[in-house]
Image (cartoon, rainbow, N blue to C red; front, side, top):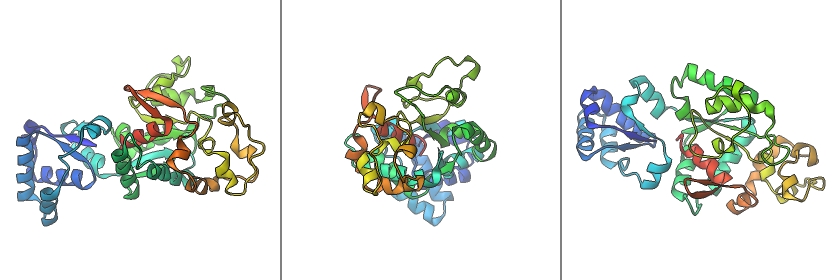
Length: 311
């Protein structure tokens, strides 16, 4: 995240708190956006009120040197929009990916981030995402299926992330599609909740609200194919000695096949091993592409950039 601090707000802050929160912002991998006068004042405040380690931190930090790319894709927030307690949670607590089968899927998404760290479009952002995963600043929370997604978010917002869920949480779910864009209608309640609209007025799914980086009120992703299993080629399953003879050959059917029923011997516990044989090129084969702000993004690039928004 990039935290905007203006000089007028800085003048109203308790100096000891300002020194502490700025050092926490920096040490947790975030950036500070301010003018030169504010930057000098922050330095002086930390040098007066900070610990020895914090004084060294502010002298060596590059947290003021974000790039234009980071300014575009990271979430930019104003420090004065949050209470001191919220600021502590926002910039110090881990962010969470809500996953249906977190025990097996989290390693897959860590492997995706690692595979995309040399992505031609956004290698620096992908490396930043991978670092957040490795250091525990981005972790996972089991949400037990899409039917419990709204309940889990509300629990988090009533507990730790009060007023902060849209900045710290990203929900991920399977589409369970039987064919392209045919999302089952029993998902409309969670879709409406995540889009901030009444489910009573639901008429149809708008994929432009799903496959974009401009989501409100929550950041979330629904796999375009049936489930995460459909993103692995037959060769990945065959590398585990699994029989793929029942899987359709044509992608329009293969992408929506029920893998758990079609691949003999497959179990959810195989997911981490499946991902271990995948390269970025393997992941990119056969992906749906979306135009976001004039940029062509594959679905996995888009998903990973959504995760970048909460780190």
